Amino acid sequence: MNTDKSQIAYFFLAPAVSAIFVFFFLPVIAAFAISFTDFDIYTLGDFSTLRFVGLENYFKLFDDELFWTALRNTFYFVFAAGPLSIAVSLGAALLLNSKLVKYKAIFRLSYFLPVVTTLVAVAIIWRFIYHKNFGLMNYFLGFFDINPIDWLGDPVWAMPAIIIMAVWKNFGYNMIIFIAGLQNIPEELYEAADIEGANAFQKFKSITLPMLAPTTLFITIITMIGYFQLFAEPYVMTQGGPLNSTLSIVQYMYQEGFRWWNMGYSASIAFVLFFIIFLGTLAQFKIQKPAIS
Image (cartoon, rainbow, N blue to C red; front, side):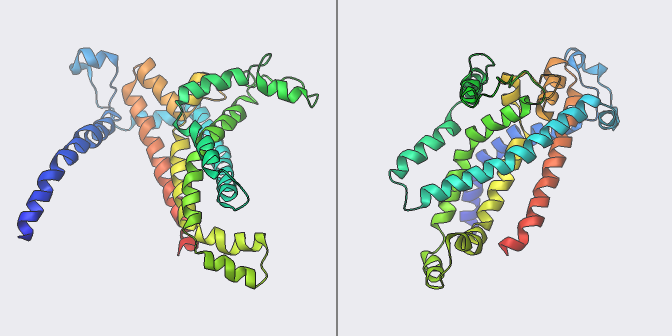
């Protein structure tokens, strides 16, 4: 009987597993194989021109200044926008989970709307907000007698401008997850802390943060993975400029693969990024494991 049930389960799982293999694992395997070749636009016309180059594409990255620029920009974005986004998400979740705020559903919907809005549309709107002469950002700074800033045209300010937009766009998703984590904390813990005379900060430090550790780990990992794949924001808002100050590693991979048709080289960039994300995920588990256990 159990054997029959297993066979039925495999029968229903087969289409989904086959689709995952064909549309996910097979392309990944093919891309990994391509990274060891000089696959380019000429190969599409004549596969006899395809050559196996081994690790040449990977070694080439070490001497590619544009690759290192894109990598630095990506790390800058991840380590600046990631913690800021998580902090804003946690702050909003604490506020909306408290008893001080009325009409919580309206605020949750308002904060979550940017998440489900098309990223390209959001980026275009923020381009107008950052406009040097007519943008709302400089109009607001004018009240404090601050001179207009060329947000997207100055290499110093371009990446911070994208970081601000990305945090505004994405914090609502993490906020919802934090709210779910906060609602799973037993109320009895806070009542016991009140009896002991603990203040709000002590309760946050000793109860809220430790109990949110698994949630924080999950949010940290998905935020890091998502931010390492920065692409649409600089592609729409700055095209990687000015002076490559917002060029991300994914955007550089896209340019090499689909603008210059260096598909082999582009694939090697993709797997270097995968390796970096993999190491980052392991590091997050290592750092936050004591808090979870």
